Structure formats: structure tokens, C-alpha cells
Length: 285
Image 1 (cartoon, one colour):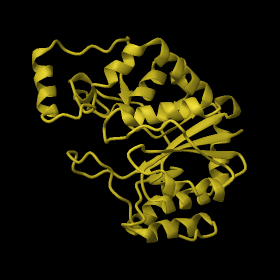
Image 2 (cartoon, helix red, strand yellow):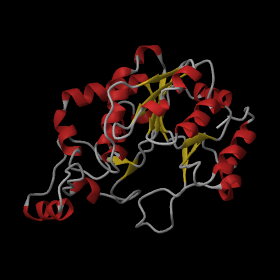
Image 3 (cartoon, one colour):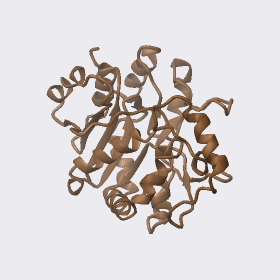
């Protein structure tokens, strides 16, 4: 079994180096997408340092909650030679493993065929239906776009999803078989109206792939994703909390294989402690 990692990055090349160092394993290859808004040059040394690192050539500009994250993921899927791999694991450069690379490999191997992608109903389990059913102009770079989106929702008929799907989701970080990815790409090619619909949603990256697979023959193989995320008790805060050394015990006792978000500029010690915990040689940064 071989696994491709698609890593979305936009900052801290040295932190990405730590992530790559922690995940070195013969069956892993890393494909890195650098946000088009930033200079990619500081990241390029990584392909010389690691023989299993490649860069996605077609880059997308990524803005929070906008379509760019989906576009970057699609660009990655289209450039990764999917026939060469059994899985693609989509993570960010601010993730870090909670288990050694060989244990991550064995965990997935024992569950080969499982689609690790969280699928919660937007009506009850994860009540965020307005993000999908209202008009959101998050991809428009114009003043007053939020008020305009609310106005469109008020005056226009209720939005209807272009296919008969139950919309589910939760996270845009997932570990999918290449069969599921090929199916998703084919579905989107055959249903361009779905892409158009999601371009007027808020944070569509958290729904698009979950919904496609949940409404397909892959549904019976779906399991929760493999990434630990710490959310604030304040539900009005849409960003995950930054993990620090205070979270260490909770992290190592988690059943997840990865965690996010980390920022070496905010707390470098938590990354060094996790390096020590999973038993890898420290990274010079």
C-alpha cells in the first residue's frame, strides 16, 4: 500500500520541514501545494532535503472559507498520479502526527478500503445549514459583499442543491482511497452545477467531498477522519484553537493520528515534545 500526502501550506517552511521529517516512511510521498498568495521560493529547499517531496505546479489563492481550498485540493488531485497510490491523505502544513509514521501506515493498512472523512448532517448533528442554503459572496472581492449576500437570500427563491443529495460534512481534512477520489473527480466533471452552487456557500470545502461520497456507494465505508481539532466552547468562534504544550496530554491520549493547528511561532515546545513522543530525531530549524 502506498499513500500520497497532499499538504496545503502557506507559511513557516521550517514547520513544514518538521512535519515532513516526522512522516518519513518508504510508502509515503508528499505533494505540497503552496498558496499562490505567498512566495513559494522559501519552500523549495524541501524537495532537495527530502527525496519524496514534490510541489503542485498549478497553485490557487486560498482565502478563509472561500473556494480556493477546494481548488487547491482539486489541483492536487489532478497532478498526483493517483494510479500509483492506494490513498491520499489531505492535511495542512499546520498539522502534526500523534503517532510514528510506521504506526500511521499500519493503522490505515489494517482498515484498507475505509474512507476517513467526517460526514455529519448539517440539519442536526452539525447545524450549519445557513452556510449552504443562503447566498454567500465569500469569493467576491468587493465591499459590502456580506450585506449583498443577505439581500440576495432575502429577495431570491430558496437555494436548491442541483442534485438530490443529503448535504453532510464537518472537515476538509481527510484520508480517502484513490478510488473514492477518482469517483469524486468524475462526479464533479459530470455535474458542473455542483461546483457553481458551492461557489456561493460559506466554507464549502467542509461539505463538498463528504457529500459526494455520502451519497454514493462509498457511504458504507465511511468513518470519522483522523485529525484531532480543538474547538472553542464559544460556538461563534469559527477557527480551531491553536494547540500548545498545555494540550500535550490530551493529544497523546487521543485516538486520532494527527492534530491541528500548530504554530511554531506561537508555541515551538509542543512540536518538540511531540517529536520526542513519537520517537523521531529532532529537526534542525
